[in-house]
Image 1: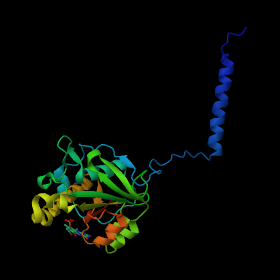
Image 2 (image 1 turned 90 degrees about the horizontal axis):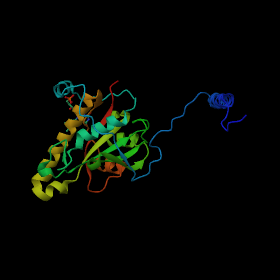
Image 3 (image 1 turned 45 degrees about the vertical axis):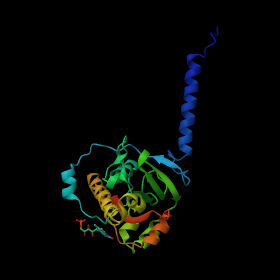
Length: 247
Ligand SMILES: Cc1cc2nc3c(=O)[nH]c(=O)nc-3n(C[C@H](O)[C@H](O)[C@H](O)COP(=O)(O)O)c2cc1C
């Protein structure tokens, strides 16, 4: 007599058939599990919130200062997205959300610095190659344009090959008028550049603490860098920080 429920034998047969079809699919697919890269469908203007910064690390600030060096050789293996986020946070991240204060000090909290990322193909796991703009307010990056611009940026930096070989290049730019509005000429010719130094040292120390390698690059053709990154007219490049894993 039927109770309306499938018998134990029917259930086992169905389960067996399901497992068999999954197994066949694996065989036909050559045992490949294809995990689609996460951020491939990006378009200019789209934003990606970065993983929240980690506030505990394995290296003390004293150890990072003692071992910091300008490093121009990189292993070629990609960075993790959280590592990119950590470097950007160290450069300009918001550390006091209520007052919008940031990781690096700023004259009168005028915050004249903007940070861009030029990510090469395979430079950051799951991140499409392209130029991105860091938004400290919500710890996100928004795409300026897709594509691998390593060769062009390297050429703009007088052919310094570490720029071409890095996983990513962080580009620290200045919007002079933000500080000049309050402090005039002194703001423009001194304070903004001092701030780029503060942000840069944070990048160095954060890279060192994560076992990454970087170097401050100040020698480049300004106009060429601006063109490669499609920077707004008033965002002036001051520093390029190529970053990669130590070899
Ligand atoms: C303002 C500034 C500009 C720099 N520009 C470059 C550069 O264009 N290319 C480069 O390879 N290193 C550059 N450096 C890195 C210096 O060469 C490096 O800091 C110096 O040799 C001391 O080595 P250390 O950083 O390992 O202590 C620059 C450093 C500073 C502070």
